[in-house]
Amino acid sequence: MAQNFSGLDKSPMDAASFPSSYKESDKLIKIVYSRPQLKGRAVSDLAKNDAVWRTGANEAAELTLYVPMTMGGKTIEPGTYTFYVIPGEDEWTAIVNTDLNVWGSYFYDESKDVARMNVPVTKGDENLEAFSIAFEDAEDGVHMHLGWGHKRVAVPFKK
Image (tube, rainbow, N blue to C red; front, side, top):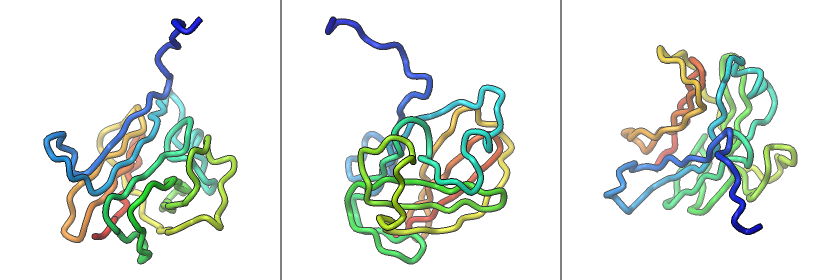
C-alpha cells in the first residue's frame, strides 16, 4: 500500500520569498501557504470578515524571518511563526503568532501573538482566481502582498 499516492490537492501548497530569485540564497523572509480557488464564490465566503483566517487553505500559513524585522511597530526575531489575518471590508488585521504546525485557525490563541497590524484593503484590476502572496522590495524593508479576487492587501515588514 505504500505505493498509493494521493491526487493533487485542491488547494496546492506554495511558497513566496524575498528576494524571490532562486539565484539569491540570502533570503530575508519566506511564507509557505496553500492556495484556495474561488470557483465562483466570493472571497468573503471563504475568508470571513471579522474572523481569524489561516491565510490560505489547509494548514495555517507559516512565515519564516531570517533577520529581525518589525511589523506594526513590534520587533519580530528570526524564526518561524504562523501568519494569520482577520479580513474586513476596508482593512485586514495581519497577525504573527508563535503557534506552529496548526490546521486552519480553529485553535488560534491570541495570547501567542507577537505582532499585529491593521492594513487597508485596495482593489486590483486583475481578478485572481487563486489566493496569492508575493513580496516586493520597499525602501524601508519588504512588503508582503496578499491578493484574491479583486482584493489586495500589502503588509509592510521593516528591516
